Image (cartoon, rainbow, N blue to C red; front, side):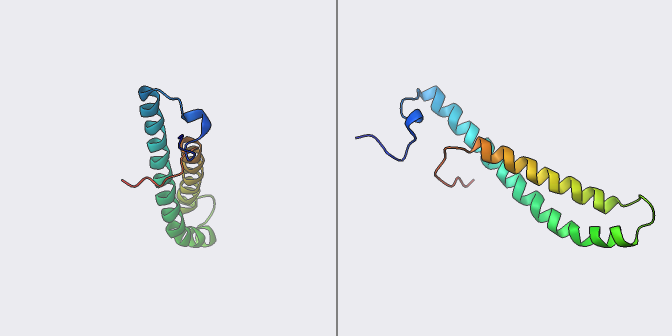
Length: 94
C-alpha cells in the first residue's frame, strides 16, 4: 500500500533524486533558521533604531540602516526557506 503522506510526484523518485530532495529541504530549513535568528536580532536592534532615528542628526542613522538590513535579510531568507522546504510535512531538527 502506498504511503499517502508522501506527495504523488515524490512516490516514484530514484534514490539519487531522494538525496537531492532531502538536501534541498535541509537547505530550506537552514534558511528558515537564519530567518528566525535575523528576525530576533531585528527586534532587539529595533530598540536602538528608534532612538537613533529620533536623536541622530541628518542622514547619519547607522542603527536604522542595520535594522533595515536585518529585516530584509529575515524576509528574503524566510521566503527562500519556505520555497526550498515545500512539500515537507515534517519538522527537521539538527
